[in-house]
Length: 259
Ligand code: SF4
Image (tube, rainbow, N blue to C red):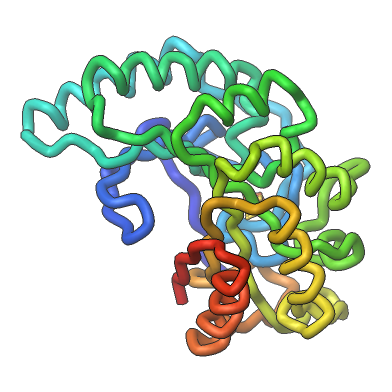
């Protein structure tokens, strides 16, 4: 099985439907995934237990690499639509995440004022006020909610340590609608467990959570690349993703579907 890791701190630009021309920032090591989730479908592979020898980029290094990349894009006449924190795991686990966000916003204001600063996060650290406030300073925060049912989160996302989806939903409400929820729908089997967050019960709980959180948008997608060994997971068909999207739209929430 091939897994997909970003080998640079600043990467791209890449073009995507949801973000346009996006310059990526990976705050995690180039050679391994670092995450406090262990999603059964993760394109980076399963989360390892061994953190020895792990080195994260320093705040200053990230700032300098971003400055150089933005200056080069300006010289080439193609500035990004977005500067996006993604990469090999959960970006908010970087110990200087709030400071890195401040540096990025300052560089964006100076060198690419039309670009949005975007973060893809699993939302596990929004209980920390400094992380939550840093995310709130970003233009686009895309926060994961694959299921609103505790047992499903345990089997799909396999969180490390104590985790409560009810508490996560309470914290997501603190964003007062200024957020995007990202949900990956998948079916199949993983290490003997049934994987399916598309059942009637799942969708009812998910829609109830969306009603409470009232995000400005929901990104709905399914698996695209190889998934970790140990499972037989299937894409959810495009027409079914569209049907799920129409249920969120009936709540007055915009949707983006990536089949
Ligand atoms: S939250 Fe993202 S990086 Fe972490 S395990 Fe899940 S898919 Fe992978």
